[in-house]
Length: 199
Image 1 (cartoon, helix red, strand yellow):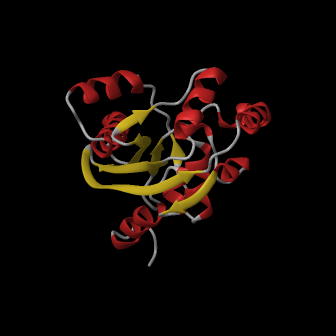
Image 2 (image 1 turned 135 degrees about the horizontal axis):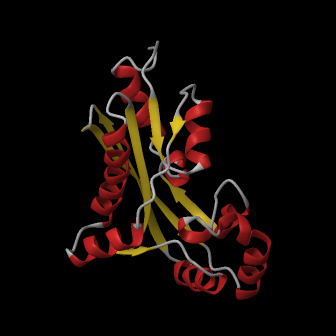
């Protein structure tokens, strides 16, 4: 019987990506005050990359404490706009303001994954993608949010590249899976190297 692999994330996209790659995972979401953790790390002048890594590790550790016999994958993603982190908007007005701020500018998405085994971290990776938004009109922005708010309201940056959000961009540099919130290739490589997945 193979090892139990737990995904410490509520993201259906992450679960779907791993499942389509042939990795069966048990999903155990972790309830944490992400904003409080981010705020504390920002106060300590932590870099966006380190914040993404810390949030992913926090989730993996939390689940691993109760499931030490399983392999636990913790994940998180942050949006870095010139060193400043943008969090998921809580209202449509906040989303509109964020998208106006991102308009015609370049930002980075940092997708972190930390794997715990036996209650200890054994692997970590932070993938980075650079995205450039086009100079869309306010009218398009309002129509976009009207059409897509229910789908994108829980996403950092308020867009999904796999949906209409792709129309907001002129350039995407980096791994598509990182944009979706998971350094998938690196995770699969680690799991194959360690024998969790067959080579």
